[in-house]
Amino acid sequence: MNKPPTHRAGLRWQTSLVVFAVLAGCGRGEQPAPDASPSLTVQASSPVTQALDRAIAVSGSVAAWQEMSLGVELSGIRIAQVLVEVGDTVARGQPLVRLDSRTLEVQARQADAALAQAQANLTLARAESTRGESLRDQRLISASDFDQLKANLLRAEAQLVTAEADRDAVRLNLGFATLVAPEPGVISARAVQPGQVVSAGAELLRLIRDARLEWRAELAEKDLTRVTPGTVVELTGPAGEVVRGRVRAVSPSLDPQTRTGLVYADLPEPGVLRAGMFAQGRIVLGSKDVMVLPREAIVFRDGLPYVFVVKAREGGGDPGLVTVEQRRISVGIQQGDVTEILGGVTATERVAVRGAGFLSDGDTVRVADAAPAGAVAAAPPGAVEERE
Image 1 (cartoon, rainbow, N blue to C red):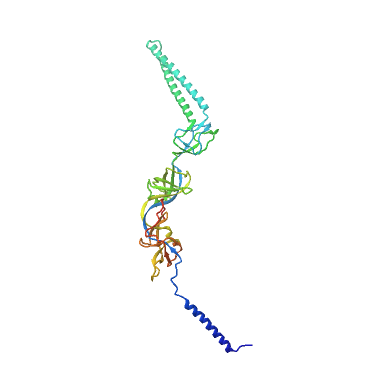
Image 2: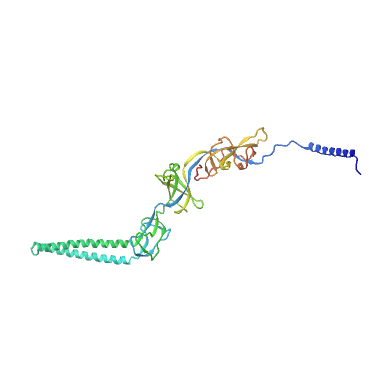
């Protein structure tokens, strides 16, 4: 059975009153909302002045200062002994390779015998010449016979000189049968085995003179003119080891095609570096007092550097709350945990450091455990690189 319309309207009115009463009761219990809490807490710091080393970052190759190719001056003789291996350190005059010298020793004995015979012939020729001179004075021999005796003396003297030269040549060859180190150094290559027949001029060993290595790097013309002999060089080894050296020489000319020149740096203690290695290096040009900030305070967005400058909130409120302003800056060299600031922020302003990467322009943040102005972590020692 359907209810009359007037009855339905009364029910709607009663329901509306109940809802209104509930809403009114809830409204009487609310309090004004306090300031919203910031979503992030940051630390802040001001730029400080600090001495940073300026350097040119460049790659180069490690090479021997002087590498000597060693061989013998004899041909057709068999190798008897190889006395060194690659990596051995040798002294000046130390035997490295011995040839089979039996044939040369026989030739040396023959030369000694020929020399003795020449000396005997000279002794006889001198005696005959002396006796012939006496006979000539007594007119017992003719002038022509005396001239013949004199010629025999001269011939014997010449034969003696020839025999001495032959003996010296054989002894020299006998000395060549042992290859010795011409300079102290380290053996860098070996291309000979016992039993091998050698030929004159063939490379048997290679020697790095004085075991001395150097680093060679190509620099563009704008950088080459900034480097002078004695400048410190720091190289990075395969496992991150730092090897230090000094520039020995700078190329006096540039390649006309590439407009680059070579820098040669001595490595007194090469450590793990070996000839032929490729090493990243830094040529330290000196130090300069610059304004720096911690690296974590700098945020790169779209490839550009920014910082968030801390500013007081407008309208007062909680003094612990501040707003941040995103600001574009210019940066220079980097060293350790700090970066040079070339512009965009002053030494009296404070910027967000820890937590800066999560900020946006105009954010409200709380500065907690704020670092005092100028408190920037000291950078560890080491070379730096200039950013273009």
